[in-house]
Amino acid sequence: MKRFCYLFSAMLTFAGTGEALAQQPSVTAVLQRNNIKAVVQSNGALFQDFSQGQFIVPYAPGQPEITALRGAGLWLGGLDAGGNLKVAAQLYNQNGMADFQTGLHPENATGFSPLNKIWRVTREQIEAHRADFADNGVVDNPISAIFGWPGKDNLFFSDYNQGMTLPFTPSNLAPYWDNDGTGTYDPHRGDFPVLGIRGCLENAPIADEMLWFAFHDAIAHTQTGGQRMNVEVQATVFTYGCQEADNPLNDVVFVNYKIISLGVEQIFDTYFGIFTDIEIGNFNDDFAGCDPDRQLIFGYNSDPDDEGFYGANPPVVAIDFLRGPLSEGAQEVPVRALFPIGNNGIDPGTPVEYYRLLSGQQVDGTAVANGGFPYPDDPNDPSGDSEVTADNTPGNRRMLSTFGPFRLDPGAVNELIVAFSFTQQPGATPLENVAAMYDRVDVLQNHFDGCFSNLGNSCSPLVSSDEETIGARVEMKVMPNPASNEVRVLFSGQEVRRLEVYDATGKKVSELFRETGASEWRLPVGQLPSGIYWVKAQGEDGSFTAKPLVVSR
Image (cartoon, rainbow, N blue to C red):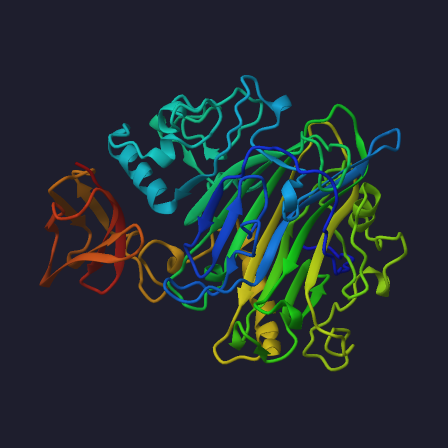
């Protein structure tokens, strides 16, 4: 359930001062499973390559790439019992300035290893692993992404990570389904990666593509100049790809921050925040707004033409906060603020100024106008409060959304879960895209509230929304699996008249058809490269089912 929030927004440039920090270079990963191509850095910087934005929407291979965000990152701040300020902020890492470092916090691991890596796993790999284990209780064909997953005490970790060691830590590290109930990650016994969302573990939710990495602030803070918060952040970034062209899941990147407090003292008046630099193509003509009830901020073009970039029909970008941190009373903390939009903003240059922003004030400590959340209305409403009705001057919109205040106790583990999405309806104006955005973010919130167990057939591998699945009333066996030259595909309950084989990218690579159905098929796979595939079967009544297949030589 969403709670009421106060929002405000700000225009910030964050040039910063200070000498460059010699720290371990960040590792980069690219998500491009759906209509977004997004760059993620292992030190927590999102949607940037440290020189320009990398949130490409809509993404299509071979087409011009235009970013709608310059970057995004986590902000944290609070006070110890003596009133000493602690603050950490992720920005652009300009001139080496940074408050976060890649890897595990040194106080949270024995046998410390930097773990400067981003781990990736796909739905196809997980399903193939589960099928491999299910057929005989043994994993005959280990998949490196599964066996190299940094789950707690994974005995196979070094073998699949070029000798990298997995340190002992009281945390579970990368989330997983504990199939054998041992409390450790045992992929050879059927354990597999999951999203690890609090309250959803019984559902064992997975996504089409998942990234996991860790970072911390146990370094000199050369961005803010503040004292350390002493936190470790374990981040899961994930996406879905669905066959319905207008499914909102095709147009979103989810980020789950698991924030672990490793300090020995309580931190009072704590705030967690997300900084987002909205840059919809030409950043000089953007507007922004918020929706307090939805815990949502969004950016849109001020006119129908995004000169030099998107042209007509520029997209709307939305940053929806699906879950906030927990207070000391285990209650979810609502969004507190979004700092004011405008060209008269002052850049923060000291720890106090960063903390003022986090706590919902202007940089100089003055109060934010309009109760803390200007422009909370739909800009399509001529009587509402928006940048359109205010007749503002468009420009770059850099937003800070904050949660708090609350007390952060030693050992506390919090989640901050955010959906970064875009809306671009065919032939729409910016305001028409805003109108469509509201319904789409509601769909995303509904999927999150349902632990992503209510996606329907359109987001299941190879079965679209208009294809009735026969999986519940027909048994399909693929054997041997893994296979090298040929497999037998057996059916009971209904005969099948069409078989199709898809590779891990969703491309059809083989097809067989019979005028009359049959309960046994022989499928040649010798021509296929080693890898993970899906065998899709069409029954005589036109319904479909699918099973994973591993080709290995």
